[in-house]
Length: 81
Image 1 (cartoon, rainbow, N blue to C red):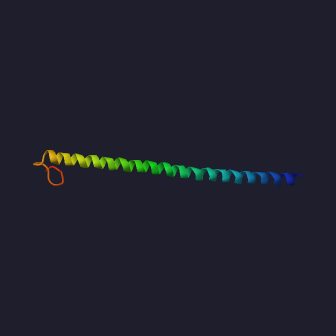
Image 2 (image 1 turned 90 degrees about the horizontal axis):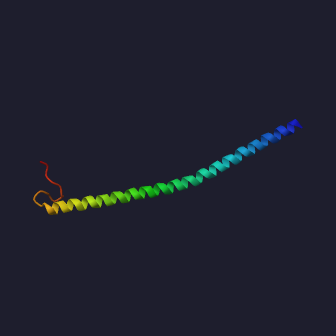
Image 3 (image 1 turned 45 degrees about the vertical axis):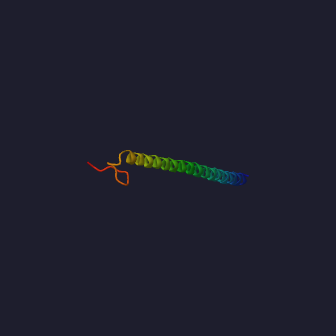
């Protein structure tokens, strides 16, 4: 009977290991989708901030050029001193 018990316990241990592996793989797959979604949202936010920043800087340069036409060139930058 001890031979049968040994086979039974080894078989149960193998089934438990495969079950744990399946659960781990299932959890990892779900997390990667969530991580990808959050990463995309963060990247989109950064792109929006950069675009807004670029517009603010562009309009500020234009306002400076219009306010002081004698100091600015056609690109809106001032000459170095």
